[in-house]
Amino acid sequence: MVKPLSQKKFRAVVVGGGVTGLVASHAFTKAGIDHIVLERGCEAAPPAGASLAIYPHGARILQQLGLLERTQKIADPLEDGATNRWPDGSPIQWSDLWRFVRENHGVELMLLERRGYLEVLWENLPNKSRVLFNKRVTDIIEDNDGIEVFLSDGTSERGDIVVGADGVHSTVREKMWEHANRLEPGIIDVKEKKAITTQWKCLLGFGPGEPQMKNELSVVYNHGYSFLLGTQPRRCFYFVFQRVKKPWTRYSRPHYTQQDAEEMAASVADMPISETMVFGELWKKRWRGSVVDIEEGVLSRWHYGRTVLVGDTAHKITPNMALGGNSGMESVVVLTNLLHTHLSATNFNSPSRHTLNSLFQQYQDQRLPRMKHIMEFSRLISRTQAWDNWILKMFTIWVLPYLPQRKLADDLGEIIRKAPMLDFVPLGEWKEGRLEWEDMKVKDGRERKTKTLVPRSRGLQGKALLGTALVLSSLLWALSAKGLVKGL
Image 1 (spheres, rainbow, N blue to C red):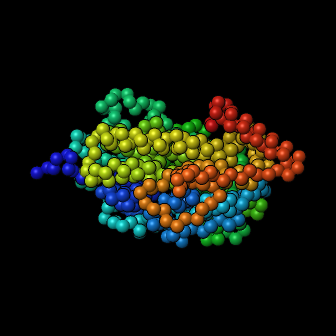
Image 2 (cartoon, rainbow, N blue to C red; image 1 turned 30 degrees about the horizontal axis):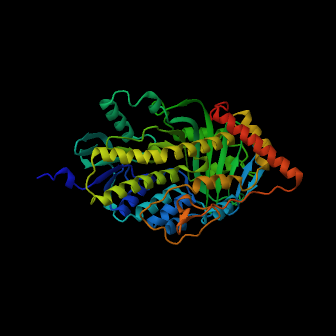
Image 3 (cartoon, rainbow, N blue to C red; image 1 turned 120 degrees about the vertical axis):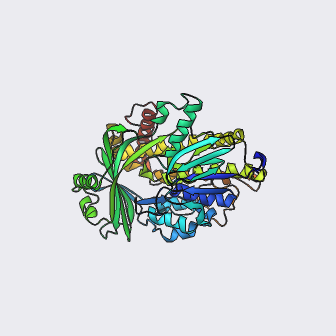
C-alpha cells in the first residue's frame, strides 16, 4: 500500500559525482537528508583536469564536513607569493598575496591536484553506497508525487527532487528546460539557452616541480592570451588561456584531441614564462595536458518544478582566480541549509511542490547576485591578463605596478568573507583573521565591525601614484559597466 503523500519521506537524486556532487553528498549526510548520487563515469577520481584551489571560505565548509585536515595534507602552500610578468617573463609586480590572504582570513589558500581532492571527498564519504557509477541519464520525468531519473542501463532512481550537479554540459539542465517549455511554452528562451558561452580556450596540465621556478603563482600577460602557473616543489600546474576568434555555445562547441593540445603547445612553446624558462620546457616534462573550453555565464533560472541546479550547471566562471570550485560548494551549502531548515521541522516528510518551489526560489535569490558579481570579477581579471583591449593594457602598464600590494588580497577578501557556510553544523576551532566574516558579525548580542586597514602612501610621489591608480581603476570600472570595454 502506498503511503499518503504527507507521510512519504524526502529523498533527493543528485546527478553528477564530481566535486560539487560529492560535496552535496557530504552536506546532505550532515543534514540527515536521504539521497543517491548518479555518476556517468566509472570512477570517483579520474585522471583528468589539473589543479583546484580552496580559498578560506571553501576551507570553512571543509572544516564543517570534517575534511579540512585531510585536504591540507595533500596541498602544498605557495610560499613565494604571486608575480605578474611582462611578455618577456620579467616581473611587473610582486605581491606577498598568500600571506595577506592568511592574515585576512586565518587560513591559507590551498592549491592541489583536482584528482587528489576528489579522492579526499570520495574516500571520506560516510556511506559510499550512496554513489552509483556508470549511470548515464537518458530521461527525467516528473509527476504529482515525485520525479524519476531514467538511466541508460535500464534502471531508474526516484525521489522528491533532482539536483543537477552534472557540470556545464548538463543533461539535467537540458531536461529541465524541455519540461519547463512543455508546461509553459517560451519560459526558457534562446537567450537563456545561450547564457553560458565560450570566449576562451585553455591548454591545461601539470608535471613535476621545476627547480628554476619559485614556489609561487605567476601570470604572464600578453596580447590575446596569458599564462597562469602554480609552481611548487612537487608539482607544476599550468594554464594557457587563449581568445577564440568567434564565441560559441554548447550547441556548436568543438571536440578537442591530443593533437589539438600538441598544436596549441607548439604555438606558445618559445614564449617566456619567467626570466629563465620558456613554456616548451614545461610542456616536455608534462604528466598530463589537454585543451578545454573556458565557458562563462550565469543562468537567470536555476530551478523549475522538482529540479534545481548547482555549481557549473547554473553558474560558470573563468578560472583565472580559481573561484569556480568554491562557488559550487557555496551553492550546495545554501541549498542544504534551506532544505534542512524545512525538513527538520516537518520530520523529513516530502514537501509539496509549492513548498519546493519556494525553497528553490529562496536559494536562487540568495545565490544569483553573488554569482554575477564573482563572474564579473573573474571576467575582468581574465581579460586584463590577456590584454583584451588597449584600456586593459594601459591599466597593466600604468596602474598595476603602483597598486598597493594588499589590493588584490583585500578585493578577494570582500568576496571571501561574505561566503555562506552550513548553518546547522558548528565550525569548531577556527583562527580569526584581519577581516570579519559576514555571518559572524553578530556575536554576543552586538555587531562587531570589520577591520579595515588603509594602505599608506609615502610622500607626495606615493600619493600621486596612488591617486592616478585609483582614477584609472575607476575609469576602467565605469567603462566596463557601460559596456565600452570590449568583452566586459
